[in-house]
Image (cartoon, rainbow, N blue to C red; front, side, top):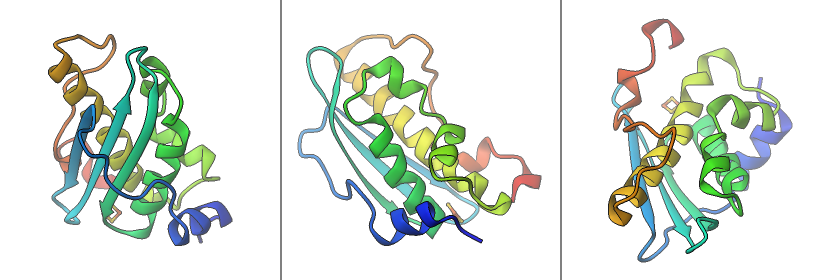
Length: 145
Ligand code: FES
């Protein structure tokens, strides 16, 4: 049911933890299943994501997608990080079962929330970034469950 990559990232998740004094922190939940994800970004003066950590209190697919999402944004600039959509994360994991697709949205939204927090702290506007949802249940259609 799960790809080898999903199983690998679930059993051996990358970049788990916290960053003290992070440049941006984003927390997103899904009220329907109760899962929560928090992403910490360390962004340097050139706008490069030097480090990223996550904590996920959630299902296996949420852990695997957070892990892969952190790998995909590490070392990237902000605009490149914005391109890391849930579809890109799922592709990198060789897919997710349809009922688990919504779990991958937590990772995308948590990255956006952390970038939003960074922009707020810096007093800057990140082109293409809209205010993220704090609860993905608001943006996921019923039929996706
Ligand atoms: Fe909640 Fe997967 S079931 S994120």
